Length: 340
Image 1 (cartoon, rainbow, N blue to C red):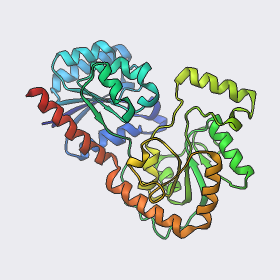
Image 2: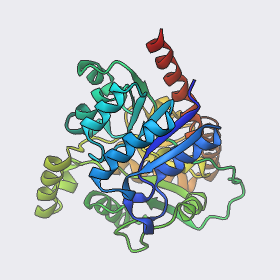
Image 3: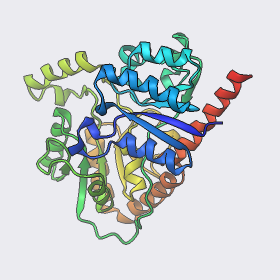
Image 4: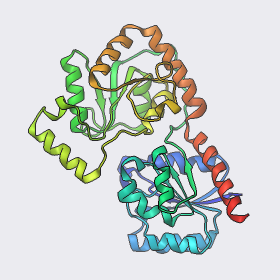
């Protein structure tokens, strides 16, 4: 049974203390402790890459953890270090949160080096099996917990969006503005700038409609034809990252957990987490978003009913505490099977 965990990831968002604690730190590290596990950590930003490899091996041998939990985001840890840990009998696992677009170029390189892998992508499970990784746990992003009251809210914004700027998101918001819909935007690149997690929670609560806009490469003809720069930028983005499809992210759960009504672009499998039209509302293109924004601004009772049900579902099922309880059960099954 897992009692002691060695946690290996970033402590600060983008390794920069000025950005505050990383979501993964608050999501996994803090919640492991709240669940009663004894947790020690090695943080990437505290070491050079060479020293990091040595420290991981040293700490593993010193504390003999039942589980070594990684959150690789780039190539912070070498294949050689991971293989050595596995050879020494440590149970290693990594949370892969971007398999929709990073499996071929990133995950496939590291997945075989772990005793088990957690993926958020239903459609990558067969890919894991094809490269020899049989111990796969499907989980998902989630939200930090909240119990703030969401009824009788004094709204500040009709429509808001929280997330970094991109050429597509900028175009999307500008089209809405031309149709008479003002979106208050927060995040890197927007006029309002970055906000803290606490500020973000307040924005979700005080917005009648919280818009969620994809950051993947988009092929809407109107967007692509808006300028030569957009066409060239889209091609560069596609070649560089391959991020050509939307995916479920923490934001899909943060909005309702923190007490907000969510209008989001449709993402495959989101219906496994929320009942569309009853707990959240989805759009497939910008024209649908405009229709839905106008409708739910005018029909406040219906909007508030959807919000209440979405908040209930998210708080009861989709916090990081729920995710940990679920995937730790899966880890225990795999560990028991390996021993047997």
